[in-house]
Image (cartoon, rainbow, N blue to C red):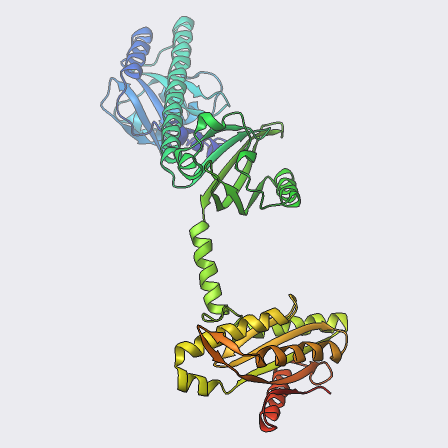
Length: 462
């Protein structure tokens, strides 16, 4: 027995066979009728639609014998799929390929076989429509032509079934997409190549207040808040036009005028010729998250009582300003400010009054320094100030003198008149120190020197 060689495109052929999803499927009356018609036309007791799998031939439909499949090695159809035309074996006992085949020497004792390959439109041979007899014989040309016509019909029906399956799959996908589109929590927007609205989902209407009828034919400019400048949008469109996508955060405006922060992702969909087809955008309202993040950041970096930068933010600012001073070759002054007699205010008048005093001190300090300077509360009654980009120590001295003067003036705290003073230590970068740690140590020591000398003054510069 000679085993049929594998087709040269065997892996692609098997993949194509899987696409039709017909193996081990339920009986089909159309195929059964075709097989019966082939048997009738050719006057053979057996006819079948045979599909050649990896190691078997499986019968989609068969008449004359009760079988669902046979091993591929013994299948006549495994030879037939190697041909582009009908494969005919007039007498299997006289054919060296089949004379000792168990399908010949045993049941069903095949003597005659004629099979027409089932060929896809792209040239893959899936199996055959075959007629079989237990006696040696020939087919009339008209009979063979009829089998070929029936084989074409089998293939046409297979293609139709595949087409219907693909259509059903496409419809299912569309239905799923529509469900996702309608039920998504994120706003979804589709605009055309000119960025005009084509469709929006319900979440868009909920988020912006605009219905589809109100935006159709318009562009997303109707949502602009004005918080982003032209350069922002130029960069966005440059990336969209070059990379085909963009995502980021921006502020937009609802129909009622309320501004909101959104996280926006845009993707460009192209036509086959490379031109723009549509833009698909997804966005969500991140205003509350952004506000919560800002609150958390402010709590971590600002003093709750005075709203001044705290020790952590002060340290970050100092490192930044030292680097800037190094690049610009300008000096930087660091002030350590300690309130004189603050403990006695707390002890005699209570912590509520003490807190009011700290808030008032913070306001006076902020009013004296420049906008580029940083005033921070280190804790208790200790404050600091960073005076960057100074040309000489005299620039720092003028600020220090103003601080001493403003803090020595009486404070009116809800009718309570309180007078205090301040001891200020000063260090200058890079003259006094080269890094933040040493700079802080020098300023701290200078402040304690003022305390020891009687308070209400400054030390560190002449």
